[in-house]
Image 1 (cartoon, rainbow, N blue to C red):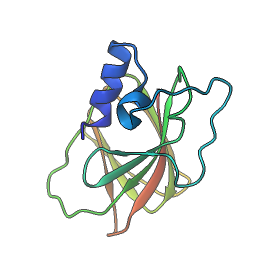
Image 2: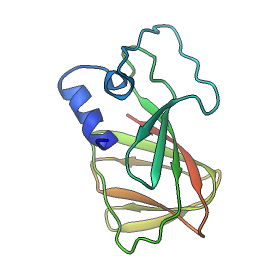
Image 3: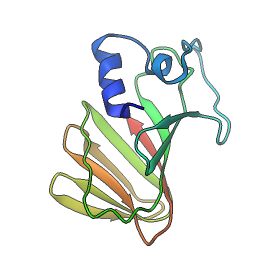
Image 4: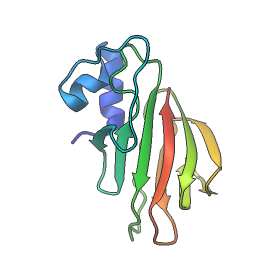
Length: 138
């Protein structure tokens, strides 16, 4: 599967809905879309990340909200990602180290961060436990 950042960039460049690539269906909701717990469209970005789209069925979205689950890995190197726009992350469960450029920060439940997603960034679950956060890509 392609990284979400590449698909997101393509959808904006070529003016089509990201959901079309992720699910094979066109979004059709205009007033609202309801996503039940654990029922969002699943997007495989990397082995250590699981993305669930929370608004995949809403037409002409201004933002891409996801629940992201990061499984713990014993990787020595950090794999960075970049994409146009901005990103908001709100920690729900676990403990996660976030890397933005040359900065490293630890996020705990209730912590949030808003950043320029054009900067190289990466996330890593800490303490051998899964981390879960809300990510909103603008």
